Image (cartoon, rainbow, N blue to C red):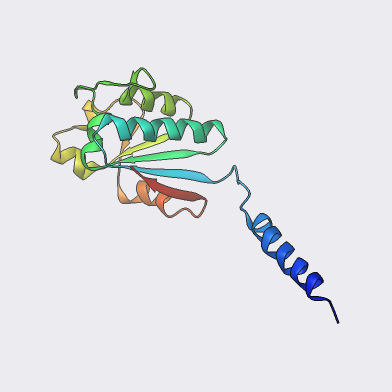
Length: 146
């Protein structure tokens, strides 16, 4: 029969070591689907910055702009600089596109804000159910919202 001390040590080690064994390992093939609704340059700039960091780690990134965030894809909308980057949100987004990010603009939201396809910045795509679902339901993508 084991002593109480040995039993206690076994339980203690199991409790301490179990969480270490169950931590997830970062899978670089996993993509990030960012749902951006914010028109405020603070949260939107944060989303762009975070997307850039994840791309540098090797993760593919897709941004879905909807609600007021579609204005960031418009050439004609006024945009102030995101203080931490010294760039506007559209400039940050264009940098992401150049590095391989996919940027989808909600077609209905764009229409509600009077944005035509010809007014979209280069590299963005008007969304449709097929394009959106290609990333949204891909098991190799995780979704996050701002």
